[in-house]
Image (cartoon, rainbow, N blue to C red):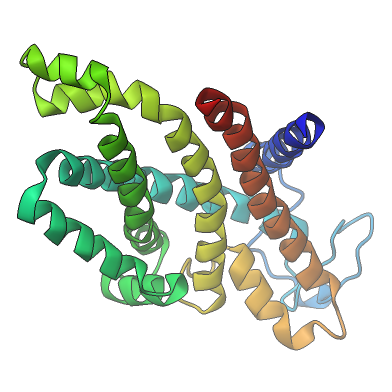
Length: 271
């Protein structure tokens, strides 16, 4: 069991490190201009000049994957950060306030969770607008219920502990109790959920871009690359396989990293 836990953490960390390294390298070097079209070299096979070939417009696939990694990680990290901050605040407020207000807040959160993820994101991005900012806001709102429910349950659990009752007896405010007394105990679970949610956010952004609702051209996106490759996948599969594999590594890497962190910190602390 210990070997299995360490494998999840190690494999996830390696996968995430590879994607982050590719993203960082793209700022200093790329094989070619990812937006430059060269119709004379349409569907060029992978080789020395184009390591992963070219697409239907003659654009270098590797360069487009590298640039798309910037936006995938940007949208993933920013949206989850926004959703985690807002969701944690809502969940903590509902748990500490109690009464009718708690019921209203949590029923609203339950209503948000009842929507399928991609459907809710499509509705939100339609209202907020397409593009990077719209994707960040839409996915961030989608992440709010997950963190609200998590923090809500943890705060309710911690409210019964002696150190919280002692802090209340000393006249500490609710805000101080949550931030200074409960937060250190909740942090391992929040970090675990944060890591796992980034993979889901990247996949959701790719889904929106695949449907034409996320990142807009000419800015490359893994989802958009997969969408454009659909009609050519039988004849030129390499233009779809490459972004698909990178997307798989990213999502799987963050999920394995979250699973490994959960085994390392959360389960260990509970024992």
